[in-house]
Image 1 (cartoon, rainbow over the protein chains, first blue to last red):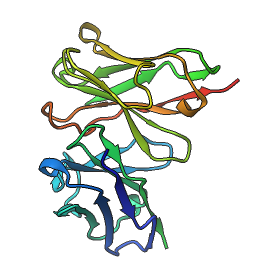
Image 2: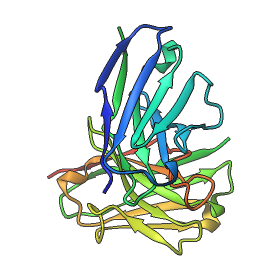
Image 3: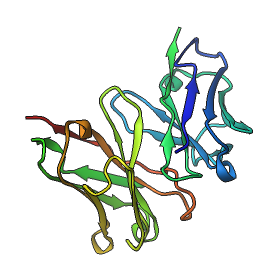
Image 4: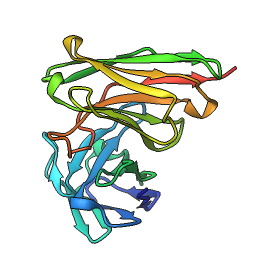
Length: 108
Length: 121
């Protein structure tokens, strides 16, 4: 199965700063089939990005996703207070569909 | 407005069974694949099972294969997860989630609120 490794484990930033989150796959992800989710405490995850770079419906354009080989990046251009949460990446190119362990973005 | 409303969680003894339900509204449930995803306390997400829109194709994660069964009733817009021979390691919040736009879009577009399953003696 494809193993996804997210880094860093925790990112401490202030509102207004830029956040860069990484997700590295153990092998190539077919057809750029990678998604990103945001999860706040006690809530279900919310889809942000699919197909490595496509924003889901209603997601602000400060969220963007890129791909370079087996490395995927989620960027939040300017952190808003509501963006502090845990972010998960998921690949759906090869079954079983797998997730990274998550990156927590916390207020510095 | 899309809603996935879950029920059926609770406490069960090891070796026991439980059935989870997920009622969908606000979208055309019968044309979308559906998933179950779980999250153990303090841990990451784990995909559990998938059913195609008409129930003709199902797949499972290795950790639940042979013990869990996913099914759906399109006449009632409802997804199910029958969980048998439960183990302590199955303790988690279980989420139902809708598939993306096509069969190959195996990401999780809309999510239920989650239901906690605790396996303990």
